[in-house]
Image 1 (cartoon, rainbow, N blue to C red):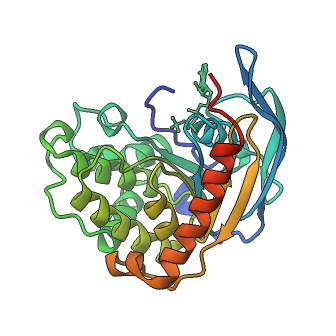
Image 2 (tube, rainbow, N blue to C red):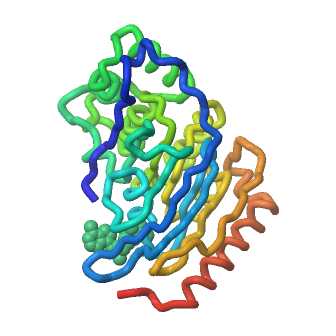
Length: 279
Ligand SMILES: Nc1ncnc2c1ncn2[C@@H]1O[C@H](COP(=O)(O)OP(=O)(O)OP(=O)(O)O)[C@@H](O)[C@H]1O
């Protein structure tokens, strides 16, 4: 998958004239999704219903199709068959942002970090005063500890990914897709980013779909954890994570958290042992 930063401008009048976004509480409905690569079936008639306005983590065995799933339902990759509807609307009618694992290739190196963040708003034709308002509002929520006037290549990995995430959020998306956004960061930075993301999510309740290889992260951030099987991929289990927010590092060692992790691991190992890894 190319490391692009997908932004889908809202259709209709310029953002200044648009009303404040109303959080949607409908469902993301995936029906009859099928996908094969060179004859290898990844999905075959896959169905899934998820509540909008929630933080959803997607976890499963290596190569089961986690990225393929979010790429298809975000419109970045074609489905062979099936559809995904957001409260009854297609992805083309929904305002989304996507953050990739590889932040280095996602940012424009020739413009300053702040201009990377502002870029989608410029493309959308948002007037200057509104652009300033949106960025200031976002920066008030996100603890940025570095100079946004710096060029991306002068920043650390965590700082660059912060810029990517801010750029994704500044368009006030209804749905945010995150494909292993922290996997290239060191542990300290990862913990900090998880905290920042929770702060944003608690305030904005953006529908968020996170693909993670890290079960602790997947549980810590999610309202619901979707556990996938081996290919052809189906839903092995959907686990409700009803832990109080925010969930700091200490929360991940609580008895309740540990029990949830054990339950998810039981399902994971059952699925992994039930079928050999496909070639
Ligand atoms: N563009 C492509 N062309 C051919 N095969 C692909 C393509 N994209 C994905 N695949 C294959 O589809 C399967 C699912 O890939 P995908 O990257 O979605 O899985 P994943 O669960 O996200 O993987 P990982 O756990 O390694 O991150 C894998 O076998 C992969 O090799």
